Amino acid sequence: MTYSLSLEQDEPGISQEIDLFIKHIDSIGHVLPGMVIAVQGMTKSTFEELKKFEDLHCKIEEAESERTVTVPYLKLNKWKKLARKHEDFALASKLLPRSLIVSLVSQYDAYLGRLLRALFIGKPEILNNSERKLSFEDIAGLASIDNARDLILEKEVESILRSSHADQFKWMENAFKLPLAKDLKCWPAFIELTERRNLFVHTDGIISSQYLSACTKHGCKIDASFDEGITLWVSAKYFHEAHECIFEIGTKLGHVLWRKLFPSDRERADKNLNDLTYDLIDQGRYNLAICLLDFAFEEIKKYSNEASKLSFLINRAQAYKWNGDERQCKEILDQIDWSAKSDNFQLANAVLTDRFSDAQAIMERIGKSGSISSNCYRDWPLFKRFRESEVFLTAYKAVFDEEFATSAEAVAIEPLADEASGIIESDDNEYRVEHVPPSVIQDAGD
Image 1 (cartoon, rainbow, N blue to C red):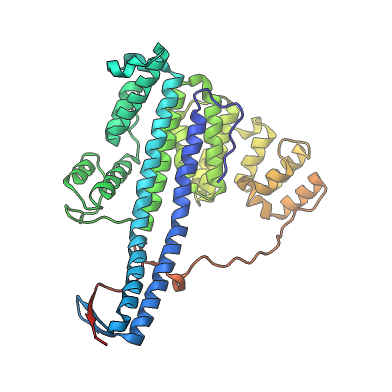
Image 2 (image 1 turned 90 degrees about the vertical axis):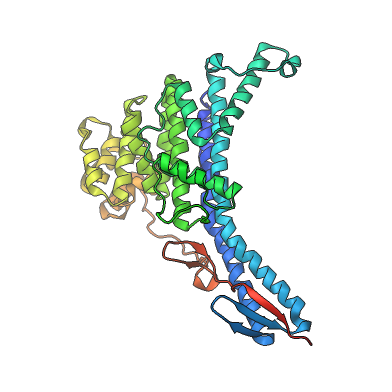
């Protein structure tokens, strides 16, 4: 995913922090499947190598809970190396997903720290009521009040980040006079995720009373079988949901605080959120786009201008449409009298309601020198169904005096992985691999 940063950034840099946060968590979210594929492939390869060695040189006895391998003395060292190599990769295949869960939460924490610094710098009066105290040692080397304010800022941020994630939200609600967690649907999932991260870091994933207490307090949906002493792992489904949860809560938090504290910067905030949701639609991540666009209409409600509002509305409608909900798409579009809007928005409405003949006429009216270029017609997800129609091809030829390319050079791409290379998913999509069970090693002598 790429994000273009405006040359005229908002003064506190919130737009840049939101974009950076998304880049970081998406890099983690997108890299996990490839990393798991690689590790699982090596696990299967080392398993097959070990099995081949045992079939050739060893005697194996299987029992219900025990596997005994009798190894010739002269082959014992080789067997140990092969077994250790396989066990390392098998364990890594389990540890890798949960280590990336830890990384997701860590990136959120780093983002929150940067976001708070940006807010404090943009609104230094927030610190006026701070009760943070500096020791003589702290202030001895400071040259000015500004330096003291900077030190207080750093200590304030550090103090906030050391508290629990639930307490962080309480602090922000009090400091910024905003009900941040109220009606936030992903809040229970966020709390469970952060508590699970704590288990991975501090108890090797073993459920504690603290985890169960926090989940109960915040209404988290956890499996009925979860009890103290059980070890938690990470399934593919869980990781995907965790990634989207962190994406959602970080983006919403940034935009709520940005718009609350800097209302005059609403135009940049609208552009940031519109660009972000467009990118999600372009990538086919419709559920997340819908979540943020519903937020734009149900929570934000105020926009910098009508063009921003209509852009949000068109993005919201197409997100629902491409996600298979034609009815909701139509309901969204029916809120506006499009006949009074510019040709660009009339065209968007026409293609989303599959009125391609009307869209053709509007497209020809906009013409070659209009604000919608040939690249827009080629690339925008808005036009993906329209591009498949004969009327689009006719209109494109009429406007740009060239044929629209409907085919591309074929490129052969080898599949990344399949069952043969080690990917094994259980019914709940858990990341796992086949590996030999614990063995009892017997020395067979010479």
